Length: 301
Ligand code: SF4
Ligand code: SF4
Image (cartoon, rainbow, N blue to C red; front, side):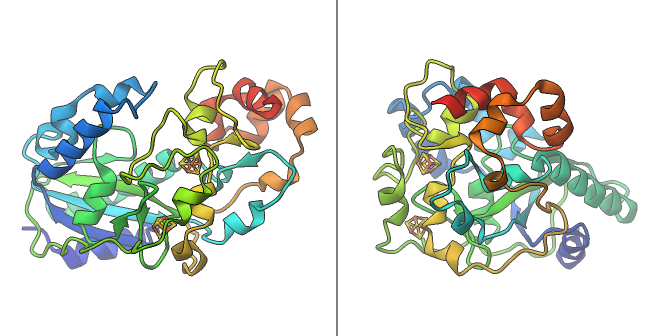
């Protein structure tokens, strides 16, 4: 039996802003909702969404002997949206102006796992960051961190939606699990629905990726006809208007300090950049995932 207080201390020590723990269970309601989302065609070109459906709704199918999931969150600069309002420069989602969170969060989780294994030598576990068919936002709800907003992102009462998640799946029970977050804090608010420039936030509280700028700037093919509204990597429009982000506390900023400001790079600078300069300036960031060519194509749209 693992000590929950010890796990949470490790998470804080590793630089995370929030940590919750949930028991492994089959997420049957989400399985039904996800099936409906796929049936409506909202996954568009994201073919991988159709894969590993059994594992997606039960971490026990993903990690043998899984008993518990530790969900950790890093908050990043909740006020950043205000800076992007009305700028002429090509816009980049706030999370992408930092080191690639996949690598940073995974390293921090692996450090936690190592410390846990020193105290509990029998313990086995795996770290995940947006890299496996894991229902991470729902696991965060189960672990008491917040609710899933209309824009389909996790919203936390303290840090709003500008949080990035990582999970440790462990093969032992924990002495105290967190209470799942009750209710949805959105109430009658529909600001994200109204602010989305392409109508991608549907009335069913899910995103239609056919219309989502974020997906089109990163994953879609060059013939995409969606108007990108000045975004060249990701899109934060539905988060910039969220009242919880306006009121959010700043995170500690230890794990993901900002490396650049997109307002400092004009369209001309992006279009004249070569691969060498791109690599020098942006290799540690998530922009590498799209690559310079894709960002330049998006800049021209
Ligand atoms: S990321 Fe942008 S395009 Fe996608 S749902 Fe949010 S506001 Fe709409
Ligand atoms: S903008 Fe309003 S509806 Fe959208 S996630 Fe935030 S609180 Fe919920």
